Image 1 (cartoon, rainbow, N blue to C red):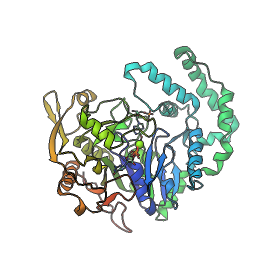
Image 2: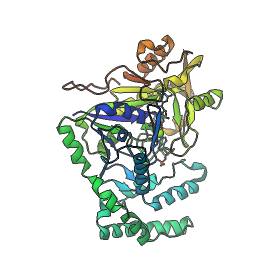
Image 3: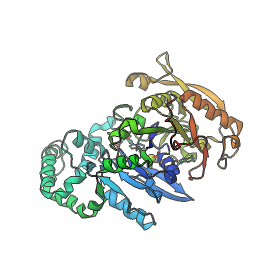
Image 4: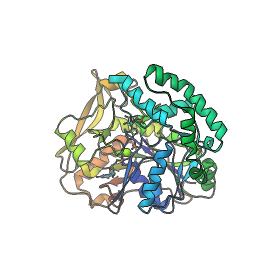
Length: 439
Ligand code: GDP
Ligand code: IMO
Ligand code: MG
């Protein structure tokens, strides 16, 4: 013990990478439990910018063993590209370990992702086009290919054959594309096998033994609560479970071993791709947040949709994940706004909801009920304690804490690792009783 989970509380890009990096020096293992190279985490270390997609952000901390968990879907080309790019910048990637049970994203998954989106027309999800959905479909449909299959050529060929039989029908007859050759895929995957072999282990054994020894394991969730296939704004979601429960499944660490669940919350709201977004702004303030916050997707380069803070969403996220702590990010982006609106409830066709409405239709109709907080103009980037913050910024944070029903344990005031206000320890001390969620 202890095991700690990091979860995005909104629609992604809350700053999970920076939070993981912040804890990097105090943890032994960082495991990515879900998603694949659809993620995009920017970490700034002493002015140097790193962009991670498939690899956990923990790879940037020299003493951390980074782990790709069983719940991840791995695109091997993207994996080795990212490893090479980091290695060329002096990052030691030799400690990376990958679960033998993780699934593979094959080239046909990417093709299917793109043609399916086109087929959906106006109902398209706006996926990252990385083949994530089709790879998880194959996993659930028992047609997936796992990392371990690369070490048994005959099994691999059989599985590729099984997967392609149905897909080629779809590709040719429905989507008017060319059929994919079994041998081309099999050989393409086999080409990575020997490079992959030394990294592949039983990661559940690795992580649980580490916990037995008292080492610290951090689970770094990709995506976020409202992109969760069960709890998100379905169907405008990703195809994995980025919530805290998914972190257990995706890494093979039992829920009883988790000590902290840290929700990463942006001081406003952003979203990439399609789907409902009650506090979305279409005026100059949306543009202000987009520009000042540098809100452009790391993965696809799409501008992120921007809106005010949505308190009912965060309170609900706190419940379903069991947040013990919140890390509030990008408070500095709000500097200079005279009056900051924050959504405290929804008006759904005349009925006021203080919590998330039950149905997607109601959420689509939700009109935010705002209260406003006075803003501040002082540059807060150099603040390192709560007392350093201007009074109005402190009051904004306090109000968010009240509305979330969970303590805010750290506050981001800039992109660099150093630009952080530490309020409470994010990791439990030795022998410390686990903190129960306040939500
Ligand atoms: P992730 O996917 O949750 O890891 O988040 P992203 O990296 O996609 O997006 C967060 C962006 O905000 C990145 O560019 C970070 O460098 C940046 N960032 C993180 N925390 C802060 C903060 O407190 N202030 C500012 N200004 N930028 C931040
Ligand atoms: P990080 O980890 C923001 C969104 C896509 C799309 C939907 C489905 O950086 O927070 P997918 O390719 O997963 O099938 O796309 O999910 N999406 C993200 N949005 N941040 C992410 O990751 C995302 N990963 C997927 O834009 O709307
Ligand atoms: Mg991101």
